[in-house]
Picture (spheres, rainbow, N blue to C red):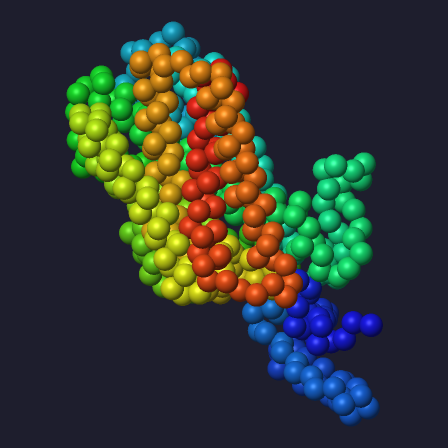
Length: 475
C-alpha cells in the first residue's frame, strides 16, 4: 500500500495531497466568497478524519465572460501588427495580379511592398533547389531536432499542469523495440528509471544541436566571406545580426506583454499565460539588451528566449576566432581549442562548486514553471555553461572547410572508427542521464560535474561528425 508520504516525498510521482477543483459560480461571487464556502464545506471532513487542509482560491484563476479593456500598450501593438497584416495583403495582391515582366523597372517603394508578399515568400520557403555551397545534411538534422523539441515542449506543458490521471505518466514506458510503443510497467515512477525514456527526460540536450549548427554555419560562412573579400567588418557583422533579429524578436515580446493573454480563455490560461505576460511587462528590456539569461532570471520573459540570448553571446566571439583561423591557422586553431576547452571546464566547475544536478531533472513538479527551478536559472540558461556545442560546431565548420578546400580523403578505417566512437559518445551523452534519475542513488559532486561538463560537448562532437560525414558522402 502506498502512503501519502510516498506520494509527497518521491519526486518521480505526482503529489496526491494537492487537489485542483473547478467550480461554476455566479459572477457576483468574489474569490474570497468561494474560498470561505469551500472551507466551511470541508470543515466536517477535517474533524472526522483529522486531516489538515488549506484552501486557496487565486483571483487570477477566476474568469468571467467580460474581457478587461485594452491598455494603451495593447492598442499600439495591435495597430503595428495590423499595419503589417495590411502590407502583407497589399503586397500579395500586387504580386499575384501585376505583370511580372515590368517589375525590373519598379521603384524602391513598390519593391519594399513586394517584400511583404505572402505568395513570393511562401514560394521561396518551399523551394527545394539548393546552392552549390549548401550543406544538405543540416536540413535533415534541423528538421528532426525541431520535431523532438516540439514533442518535448508539448509533454512539458501537458505533464506540468494539473492531471486528471497522473498514473498515465507514472505507469508507462516508451519502447521502440516492441509492437506497442507505449508499454505498461510494474512499479510506480519507473518511467524515470527506464533508460530508453531518456530521449524525453534528457531531451533538453537536443537544443544543443541548434547551437552546434549555428556555430558550424557561422564559422564556415565567415571563412567563405574571407576567401572572397579577404576581410570583414566585425562591427557591421554585429550590427547586422542585431538588426536582423531584434525587431521581430521584440515584436513577439510585445505580443507576449500585451495581447497574448487576450487570445485565449480557460481555467489555467491566466495562471500560465498571465504569468508570462506579467514577466514580459516587467523585464522586456532585458530581452532587448540580450541579458535576460543573467538579469532578473526569476522573472524571465518568455522562458524559451534564453536560447536567442545565448546564441547572440556566442556570436560576439565568433568573428574574433574565425579571422585568426583563416589568417594564421596555427594560432587560430589553438585559440579555438582553448575556448572550447574552457567552455567544457566552466560547467564542470559550476556544477561541482554549487553541488548542482548534472542535468535539469524533468520531474513533473519541475515542469509547471521551469523558471522557478534553480538549476534551470543557474546553469541551464546561462551562456558560459552552454557554450561548448557552439564552439565545437565552429571546429567542425573549419574542418569541413578544409576537407572541401583541400579535397582531403578520409581513409575507410578512420571514418568507420570515428562513426563507432562518436555514435557511442552520442548515446552516452543522451542516455547517461539515466543514472541521475535512479531512486536512492547517492549524489556525487564529481560524478555530476563530469557529466554536467562533458555531455553537451559529447553531443556536439558527435552531431558535428554526423553533419560533416553525411555531406561528404561518408554518412
